[in-house]
Image (cartoon, rainbow, N blue to C red):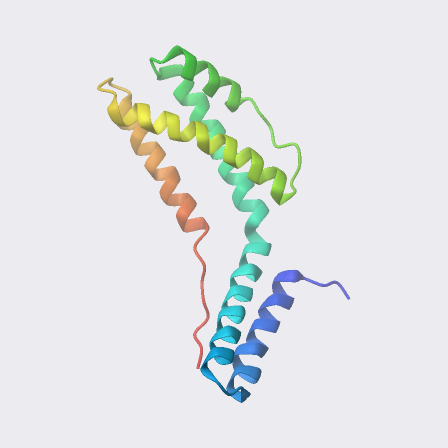
Length: 149
């Protein structure tokens, strides 16, 4: 047997919600089982997609930074953007990808802050690309819940 974590978590959550929860008495217990079940459904989705989302986000941020490094007028930031664009993910473990993602997003915040206040010709286009990235990031992390009942 190959234990697929996302399949197992989804199955456990379904059993809790559909079979066990209806048999329970008491609002607190029923509410707790409901919250645990929904959390398991979210974890099942996240287990399946976590590495892919982070890997793709990191690649997108590096590409954005490579472009931004050539056009921003803040030389120190341009140098750090260029350096960050050349980094690579050392591992596909989620914690390692998270560490890279966190560092890249801190730099993204600096870049966005500059783009928002700059009157330079490059600023509006770059800010739009940053917002496109952020919207895509939110969409990729959206949870889908099954219809119950």
